[in-house]
Length: 131
Image (cartoon, rainbow, N blue to C red; front, side, top):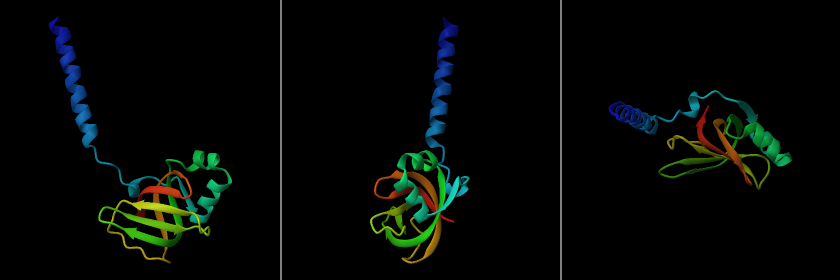
């Protein structure tokens, strides 16, 4: 009976330590992640507009480097959001940047790296960084 209680207590302790480690593990920055695809903003939007299912299979949850012209930059205390021009006035590539310190201006040509989270009217990218 003592062996069973000791084994259960040991397993519980290992589980607790593992849980605490995983909870406090730092999140990897996109800047250190391997890029899966490099693409122009207009090409990325076109891929989703032509066949969303195929584009989801190819780009969803992947690290992308997207080149384009800054259409708009919005900065709040917590985050910076960059809208890349796609040539379509109704849709953009939206990047939520990791670092709110970034200063990008409208009309600036830039390459941004982030994780693609999908398409509604715009293609949304998270954890973005300037390349």
